[in-house]
Length: 231
Image (cartoon, rainbow, N blue to C red; front, side, top):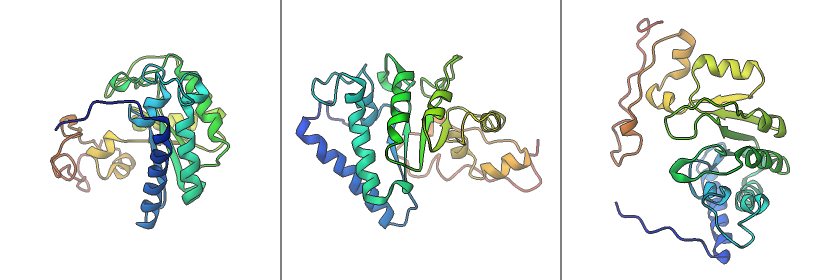
């Protein structure tokens, strides 16, 4: 697969990109989805605007923390106005450095975003734990999402390498309202049932996560057979 070399968007192109997010959200709701999650994490376009190790713009979308967050918040506003804030969530990974997309002050970035989102009354804010700076690798760190959780006034979701026990503890200790599971859910289509029963989990195959194959890694993980594989 051939990709085009990246370039800075011209300032006058950005409103069109914001409108693309608005249109995509409207299409999703019209297709029957209950809501949409804006992907502002993991090195993709919104994340590239947010992070000072990537964003070297000199216009109103670069430089200061406020400027670097402008694009993300314009999208949140446009999508919320289109489909209603109660149908909108957004995911961020302020501490991550996927594909070199990192920030020199990730905690300040996360705090600014969490506080700024309160203006829009969206359904939830979803953030990736500081320990998940790179894909599929956990790091020991004293940093946490607790300050962001306290700053955001709505439902807060944490993600990033949780086990069932760690997820329960995060909610019990009020570090998060909800915990998201990604890789474990890919490998275990009946993950809640397995958690409920204390059953063994299928191991995920990371080599199938990003592939053009429409089947392998998406539909071939087995369901739990009742009464078997219990822990």
